[in-house]
Image 1 (tube, rainbow, N blue to C red):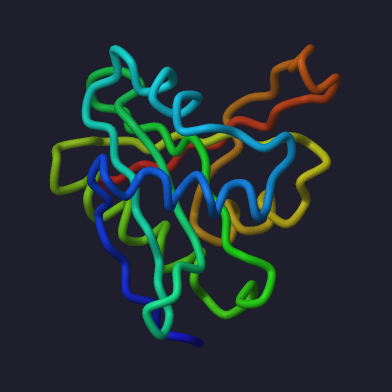
Image 2 (cartoon, one colour):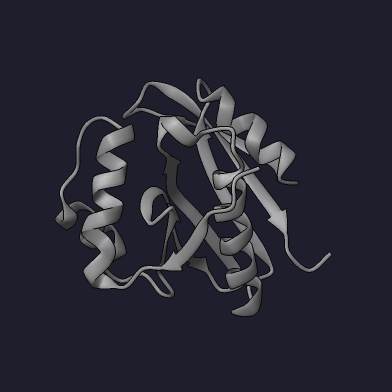
Length: 149
């Protein structure tokens, strides 16, 4: 397993997270897309993973409601997938959420994103629901993890 350095990103580092997003996902997004998503959100958290000082992944979340932190978006660049970077990002997010008094972490993924489904289950998340996402014409799998057990 590779050892990544995980940094909590400030506003100045958000463009780096956007760059990483655009290396993995389509459609490409601009910084303003992320800033709009953060508007009115409490306790936004952006983590950046680096290996040999090179950014290789990001993890973003925020408070969904009191007691529940929401993992909104994250990715690891293809070259270092399956080396434990996603796990390290998720563990860092969980530790931060627990330190900030959150009892649960929730995340969602599209039904066709099998790798993330397996990842969430391996990380101890339970499937707590399914909902239709008309934007993607696919079911979203809803996961939660109890942080106080």
